[in-house]
Length: 276
Ligand SMILES: [Mg+2]
Image (cartoon, rainbow, N blue to C red; front, top):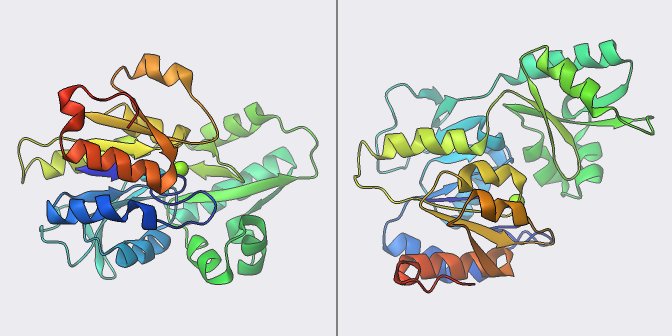
């Protein structure tokens, strides 16, 4: 099974393109290897991309908040999955209305100018993210995570924010552009749950995970083949924590393509695992 982050990993950080990963994507399809997209993006965003990529495997949305099983998948969805429109889902995160209500409470408690996605128009989200309006519309379809900004404060006391969230059984994560209010879940927990389910169909299962940022580390720690895709940041401490960690020589989809191709042809098993 291959688990992959999207932005900066399978998709180019700037252009969101994935054509450089095509050869390895084709190889995955030929070998019938489940390719699991795992992102902080929403179900609506990932579902659109999944369709473009021609994938029918389950996928992980909103940093592990939700796991979705497309209807056209060859495997029966798990018996405890819930039907949601045309897909089956497992919810690991807290519901969006709960998060929105909690963010309002936090705003009132701290007297800060906090604006969540639920307070914004699609145009505003589009301006803040750089996504075009159709993509911004899909990004606004939140289910397990509320992104927000804090304005009119020169110095943000993160501890106060974290404390206010924890009091409500929630946590704060920081992305490139927004803070996020969410339940205690991450991509790694979702990976574990899906891997256990796959093992009821296939055994043995070998796992690969690829990612380029801190919200991917929980996945990299849990798999047989962890791949850190090159980005503008480096994480030297991660190599101490994950001795088998591999890095790619190139960023984004080009690095993804090299790593996945090499793993699938067994190069890494032969000890040629320096930079791929
Ligand atoms: Mg990323």
